[in-house]
Length: 299
Image 1 (cartoon, rainbow, N blue to C red):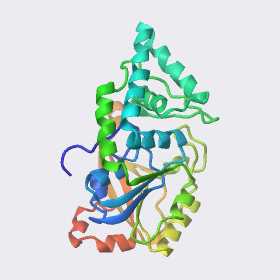
Image 2 (spheres, rainbow, N blue to C red):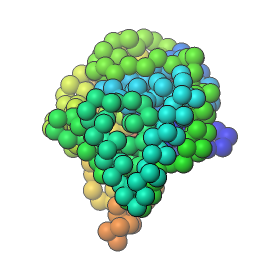
Image 3 (cartoon, one colour):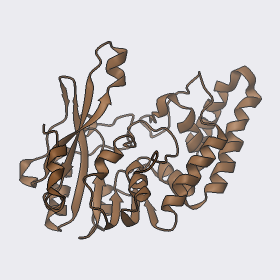
Image 4 (cartoon, rainbow, N blue to C red):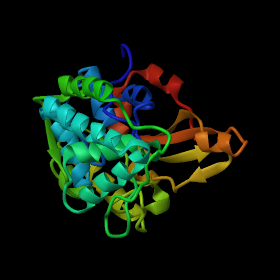
């Protein structure tokens, strides 16, 4: 991959930095890349940068987030201008610019879920970490030290992503089961579901959880349909392991990707490396070059 992978805005949990490693386990060319838990669609963007797929399906249960992605891809100029307008508003508040964030957040939670408002909230909130309250309202706080991504930088980001995905991407905000029903042989499904630690409970990072057993059954259906898939599913940091392994009966291969030193561990004075688990469908694994096995770091 030449140069940096384009992205719209910093988003906690994004697989942007890991995308080059993930793409190494994808075929050089395939029909469609389907992301049922897209987030900011980092893997689709990275795959498009290498022209891996003919078309892309981006889905996330977070409807405003999908609306933002669709606007970025299909109407980059309009999004860039609207974001600039919202971003510039904060300077009318002088030293009280933080209040502007709360006002935009209130607008958003009261029905003004425009792509520009969503983008500003992500760009300005702490660590790009989107959080939701029990009623589904955006409740993350602003980063008081900065004003968010400059409009000119944002414009470049949005146009870069639009250039890659426009005209060959479909957007949905559906339950992941509905999206998986559309998958067929020749497609590749990439899934990055919510962390297992929150799959059975409501968590502030996600609109809904994904129960372990239910998710495993969905993967079995993909196997039965002969649809290839790659799944990011928890991992380890230092001596701490997150989540339960997927059942061996699914026949997929688990490898570990080096995600680098954990920022949280550095803050705690421990400097532990994070490894994220990646599961690859059996048929996909055997279609890859044999030298790929040298890249594996087995759990």
